[in-house]
Image (cartoon, rainbow, N blue to C red):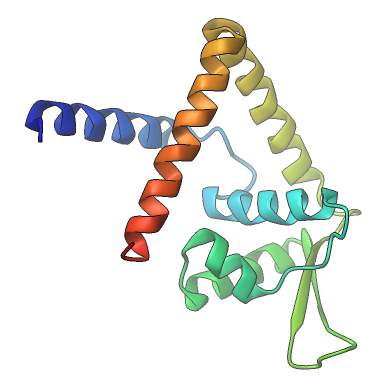
Amino acid sequence: MNHELSEDLLTAWLRLSTSIIGSRIVSELSYKESLVCNLLYRNSLKQDGKPLTATDLCIQTNMLKSQMNRILNALEEKQVITRKRSPEDGRRVLITMNPLQSQAYYRQHQHILDIMNTMILRLGEEEAFNAVRLLNRISDIAHHMQLGQ
């Protein structure tokens, strides 16, 4: 394996991560709160749009339940999300965005989309599509490595 290429890939990965987290693109909510809100938001746009549970969110974010509970408590305290017991299965707690109080997330989401649009303009659409493809491929590989595959 090419050691220099491994170091370069690691450096690029860390630069991207630091740029996203360190620049405080998201300001009204923490990075992890925004991540959870994005999953809830994207889920609400789906055809079936079934509410998610904390377990669903833990699986999608690779967070521990204790971490997720802290994030959900903070979002509920800010009234950004609502939690309700499932009418079908009282053991399940369903989580949704609170449309009346989610403006903080929606503002951040729009701000981030504006940044993404600027990146697309600077990269060009073809390179942006390639970046999406590569980032998704890298994420898939990392996910499979976590599962030991």
